[in-house]
Image 1 (cartoon, rainbow, N blue to C red):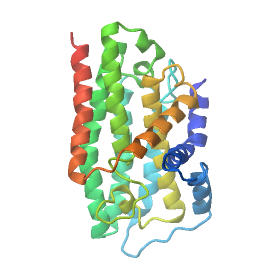
Image 2 (cartoon, rainbow, N blue to C red):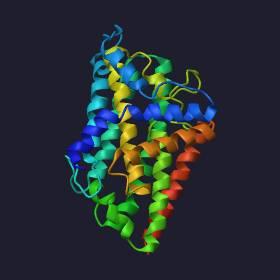
Image 3 (tube, rainbow, N blue to C red):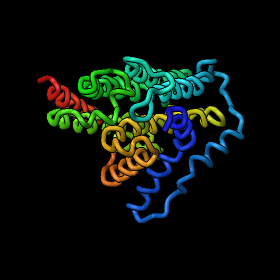
Length: 293
């Protein structure tokens, strides 16, 4: 599969992942649940609507959603199928990918703060704190991959040949994959960190930041979130399912795994979320230590 085809599949199939997660959770709970294509329907409906802006907001609020979507697409362009360079790949591009994802989050946070709402400011502050903890762990989890592959390009770090390394390196890969899976839950606002379907004021994190967005702007935010979920699912699939990561099948299986995880776990209290991120950091750090021999 070429890098261009992989990118096109990401653009087309990314909204399918939240539907798969929701369907898995519904099946585990004995419910029929929403259609798998629900996000496609929602995006089509939102794109037909106009956006309404408060008089108290500025251009920052309007620029937040398109900036977040553009940064997420740029980060996805750095990702590629196994053994192929992405459209924007270069040595050390994993740092740019982390910064682009952080920029997308920063744009949404600024848009939430621009409303002047203390409620959205509360959600923005929580998002900023948890992201400040998760981003270093994400970079730390990639360090063993760079050490084993001998390159800090995402194309090389997630190469299919990385599993042909020495047997002592394989536990480090497994630990990195476990840490990245936990970070993917935090970065994508999934249970046990956050619940994208919640409407409880005291527990909302991501959803509270987008309450004032509607129409096309909300469609941009929802689509950017789906692309971000695809990015992290592709990263985890490249480590856990290297033979299937070149196809959407591996990414879909990771989404199914996220759905099962959300089905068997309850949402953590806010004060317990840093402990989960620290657990991911401990797994990533142990993977780094195993590579330093």
